[in-house]
Length: 173
Length: 405
Image (cartoon, rainbow over all chains, first blue to last red; front, side):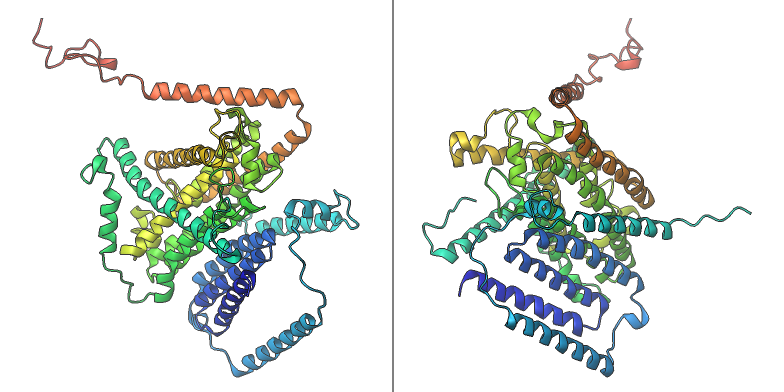
C-alpha cells in the first residue's frame, strides 16, 4: 500500500467520521465543531490531490469565514429549542432516503468512470491556470465574461448587505 | 528541505521521516521563541515602566519562563461546572494547531521550508484565520459571560481585520507576480533597496497597514479586546488554568512570529540580510548559506515581535467600537486604494521613476532609522553635573547649593 493510499484512507475515515458526528450530535455548537473537522478533512484531501489553491480556499472561505460566522450566530441564538436538537422519525426517514439516493448516484458515477488516474505529471499551478481561464494565454475557452459577471454580482451583494446593515437614521420631522 | 533521508530509508518512509523532522524543528522553534519572547515581554515592559523585570531566576532572569512553566504545569487543570467539557478541553489545542500550521509553508531560508507550496502566502493567511475558532470556542464553552463577551469580540475583530490584512498581502504579491513565498524571497536577493518594502510608496504604506492589522489579528494590545482585563476579568481565558492556559499563550506567541515571518518575507527581503549582493546558498554552499539565511530571517522576526511589544506597552487599549471603526472606516479603504495604486504603478511608472523611488525610500528610511536611534540613545537630560539642576531648571538653586555662596 503506497503512502498516498494510506494517507487517503486516514483522511477519508476522519472526514466521514466527523460528518457522521455533525448529523448525530444534539448540541448545535458541537455539530459546528464536527463540521470544522469535516471541512478541514476535505481541504486536506485537496492538498493530497495536489490542488493547493482549492485546499487553501476551502480553509479560508469555509473554516476561517463561514464556520466562524455560523458559530458566532449560534452562540448568540443557542437557547431554547436550538440548544439541543431532537430529530423526529419523519426527518430521519427523509434524510435517510436523500442520503441513500445521493450515495447511489455517486457510486454509479464512480463505477462508470473509466481511465486510470494520471501519472506523476506536475500539475499547473494557480497562476497558469488562472491566466488560462481568463484567456490571457492561448486557451480554447476564456471565462473572462463570466468572471466579471460573478464579481459584479458579488459587489452588488456587498453593497446591498452594507445598505441593509447600515445604522438607521431617524427621518427628520 | 533538501532530501535528507532518501539515502537511509526506502521511498515512502523517507518522506515520512522528512515530515516528522520538519514538524519537530518547527515545534522547537515555536517553543523556544515563546520561551524567550515571554521573558523579553517582561523585560521590555519592565524597562518601559522603569522597573527591572525578572532578575532572580538564572542570568538576567532568563529562566523566568521555565519557572512560570513549572508553576503552570503543577496547577490544577479544571473546568467550570456548567462548561461543555469536550469543547473546553479542545479549544486551546485548536488555537495552537492553527498558529503552528502557519509555519509549515513559511520558508526560513532559501529552500529551508517545511512544505514548499505554490500558494504559500494564501495558505498562511488561511490557516492563521482559523486560529479565531479556538478562541471563540473557548469563550463559548467556558459557561461564563465574561468569556463569552471575549469570544464574541474576538470573532468580530478578527473577521473584520482579516479583510485589510489580506488586501495588504495582495499588494506585494502584485509586485512579485506569484503567491510562492520561496519565489517572493528569491526576488528580493541582493542589496537593501531590492526589498519589496522600498519598491514603491504603495508597498511602503502597505507594510505599515499590514503590520497594524496583523497585530490586531494576533489580538495583541492595543487591540487585545478579547482579554481586556479591566472589563472582562481575562476575557476568553478567564476560566482556564494551568497547562491549557499556557497552550493559549504558546498559540499567541506562535501566531505573532508567524505574521512577523510573513511580513519579513513579503516586505523585508525575506531571508536576505540586505548587505550581501548575492544569494548566500549559491555562493557558499547550502549549509553555510542556510545558517546566514535562517539567522537573518529569525532576526527580522524578532525585530518585528519586539516592535509589537513596544506598541503593547506604549499605547492605551482602544474601545471595541474604536477598533471596529479603525478597521472598517480607515484600514479597509486605505488598503483598497493601495491595491489599485500598486497596480497602476506596475503598469504606468517609467523605469527611471521606479529606480529613483527605490533609492529615495531605502536611503530615506535608513536615515530616519539612524536619526531615531541617535535621538533615543543621546545623553539623558538628567546629567547636569553634581549639585546642578537639568533642563529648564538650569542655574536655579537647589537645597544642596542654596546655602553656598
